[in-house]
Image (cartoon, rainbow, N blue to C red; front, side, top):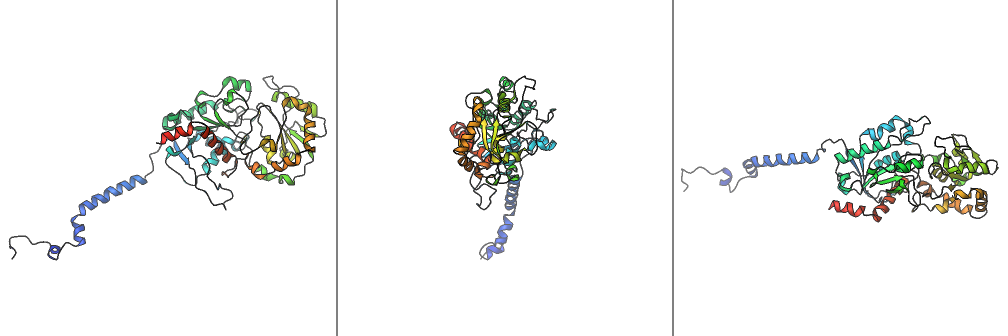
Length: 434
């Protein structure tokens, strides 16, 4: 018999054990504490990072997309790139101030930036996973010169400011001294930032860019001060719609044998006293200016591309630098490029077999140019045109926005993959991730 002095056991004990409700009531203080801790953890995990003057956008190696999406890549690009979100004074302010910023021949810096940003099927918050870092600075959008061409006088200072910001606010530049960082230098002599070769050579590439990777329109075979940094040769910018404005190349009526419209000096008129284009254009005018087979014009004409679309051969002589937007325009319009620029390196040789779609004539052989072109017409012109009119070859030279598989930005990514594989950068970046 139970001692009457002992307290009564809980009702649940008398029934054989506590109910679930009674157990929860007994342990409620601990459960509340656990709930509070989990809530705080989940809140902090979901909260955005603290504001920073410099943010990063990750462009991962994306998953393959549906093959039915014709305008989007269907295979994985070869590299993952972070794009620094710099303050707008380094890029967007320039683009907003003048619409020419995104359309002129140096606009690859804008087109590449926008194409990379547009291709992001997923975002990631791990910069440690990136192969490379893209630094978007628009140095070709200062249209303050009297002749309307972009001024590059501010380029070095603007880039130096951007690098200082990246160094100060992010750890990734300092770990490699900028070796895994990409800049665009789509100017006459790349990152030497001057249109005159002698001045460009004297100035050289800024010291803070010499370890980085440059995407530049300038490239020559052999050593040159303005390519003394790791680099990829890219095409000059031509608006993608150029390929759509005129009839398909194979349907065009071509009644012009050889075409050129542009600056051809009779006497040097620039302050340097040098002949433009090493006098090649002057010699073209002198020898073929009165030849009815050659359509050579010195005056500007807004609809000059319609003339190119009517031509069999389009002459692409050097200017101050070896490269010219005529090279891209010729390919887009199905006119066989005749490149007259010794030692020039052409973009994307792994994707474009240039000897199959163009002709190269040495600067010293201008006197025999007509003979060369006549021989091509009599022998293999049809083969060259068939190769040239392949839509994929035209696409490879155009910076689409958004990026499309096979276009110029896509080719840049593939060239960067080759560069990484042949250098020590990839193994170095991999060691940083471990």
